[in-house]
Length: 385
Image (cartoon, rainbow, N blue to C red; front, side):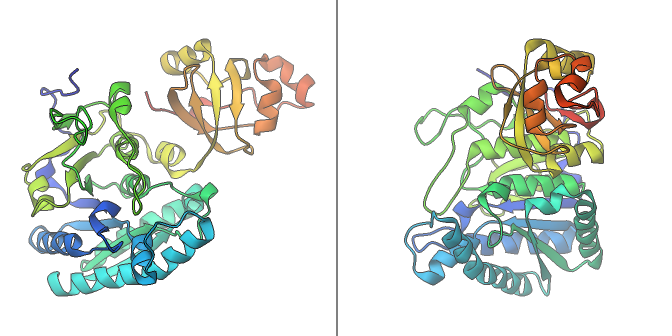
C-alpha cells in the first residue's frame, strides 16, 4: 500500500516561509519528573537564530502546562478529574511561560514573549475570531515578540475543549494565514505502520491527500503526561491543508530540526496544501467553530452534497447525534460514519429529529412553522472530501 506521490510539487516552498506556526508536543516536555525543558531549550535556540537571520514571523503553540504543574506539585500521575486538571494547569502555566520568556531572552538576544490563552468559545464567535487574528498580526508587526499560545485549561470544561493542542495549533495557523505549520513530536513523521510495533515500518516523506487507509493506520498515544496521537495530527493536517498551507510532522529531538525543515532537509512528513483554498468564512465554519453534534445522511443526500453541490434537506437526514441549538456547527456523516463535512444548522437537534426523513413541504405541519427549506444551506456547508 503506497501513500506517496512523487509528482506533485508543494504549493508553498518551505524555503520561502515568512509566517511559521510551531506546535511543541507534550512528549518533548515530559521526563521522569513530569516536565523536562531541555529539548525546548534547543528548539528555542534554533527558532531565535532563524528569526534573526530570516526575519520570520513565528508563533509557538505549546503543550506542557499540566506537566509543569505535576512537576511543581510532585504528582506522579496525570490527574483525571477535571477540577484537579484545571488546578494543575493553573499552577504549571506560569512556570511554562517563565521558562519560554527566560529562554528567548537568553538565546533570542532579547526576543520577548506574549502569552495568548484560548478557549473554543472564543473562536466560535466571529468577532472574537477576527480579533484574535488581528492581535497576533500586531504582535508580529512589533518585530521582537514570539506569541506563545495554549488552551486555557484552567477554565475550559471537557465539553468546551479543543481536545488537543494539535487541533488548536492547526486552527490558529489557518486563522493567521501562516505559510507553514510544523508539529514537533517525538517521532520523525507518519509511517505506513506503527514503528513501535513494526520494525519494518517506513517513513512517508510526502502526502498529497489524507486517505481512510492512513487514518486506519494512525494510532492514538495516551501516556501519563500526554494526550492525542497520530490521529489528532491527521485531523490537524486536514485543517491546514484545506486552508492552503502545508504541514510538517518532525522529531523535535533532532538537532536543528526547524532549520532543517525550512531548508528542505532532515527526516519528516510533509502534507501538501490543497489546490482548492477555503475562503475565510468557510474556514471559520469548518475550523473556527466547536462542533456540537452530528447529522447522519443517506446515500442520496451524500450524492447531492458531494457531486451536485446541493444543500442538505430534511429528507436526507437519517439520524441526529447529541444536542445542539439552531446555528450550531455540526458534523455531517454518511451511513458508514465517514465524515463528509460540517455546516451550520437552521434548526435545533430536537427539531431536526422531528423532521428528519420528511419532505420540505411537510415542515410546517410538523413544527408549526417553516423558517428554512434546508437543514443546512450550501452557503453554510463545508465539504471535506
